[in-house]
Length: 415
Image (cartoon, rainbow, N blue to C red):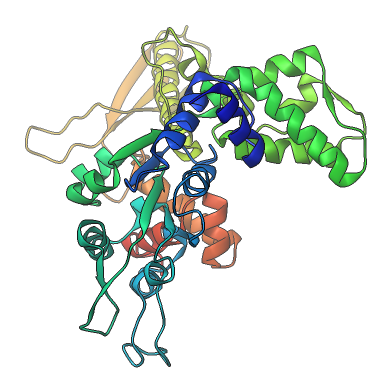
């Protein structure tokens, strides 16, 4: 594709940026648009995947046909087959009349399946049949129907991992992934961040009829060094918040940082250092939170060990006192017996320090490290409480799909 063609597409769809990864994705979309090949668009949430099915559709021979976008993660599992493939009257409770599904409506056009990784396995089997033969059957019907649609799918799920866990069909993945397009996260588009900020700043200045906000030199540095786990969507939201709430039109680094969630956590050496061998690339903010919690618990255990050493080696003082110190990872139990942590009781008197081991009984409370499942369960439970049990608001707060939330509620018995 020529630079002029790519620039024309960027202007038409409002795409900002000049990094090689973005240009490569646009170029590939234009190259495969005239074909009928299936396309799978991958990338983190908030990277702008929704623009590329439109680019493909408007540059294909199907551009005069229908374009239907479906968010697979927002449709309940019990109704998604009806939504996609339609249903016959009386096929289930509430089916008061025949209904066309999206695949029938989009005949001759393009259908965009967003969050395709959230599809139930039974629906995946139906989708595979459409890809292989163009055939589908309505819910409650036995009649085979044909459709001529081009399928463009998108996901932020690690599909290889999902296949390994049995959550996604491998044969369907290869059918969808005929042509892969990968969108880079914002943290890999450093040179585009200031361009995007300036664009959003001008947009909100026009929307709210106020001067556009500007960044000081240190604010620009802070903006570029932030990891942007929410990608372009997060940058846009932050820009809008600053535009509304800040009276000063020049924003300093301190002001900017107050709008960036967990700013100091994002800049931890383990996250921001490119040379650190323990550099983790977290898929979302929740995974990062888990890692921070685990690191904090490790530091607490180290601190307990230091305190114990100091107390053991302390100089005796006048009077008598005792102190209990919890030592994780030690046990007095014999092999084959349930192991309990040991609590060291230090008796301090005028002449010596005497150490006594106490093994807690099964009824004693001893803090144990939390598993990731326990943390996830507690996070969901508290979010449900904050939102008075409203699952849609809870899913939005946790940044997961409603389908995933329903599954987790059932899995953790949080009904």
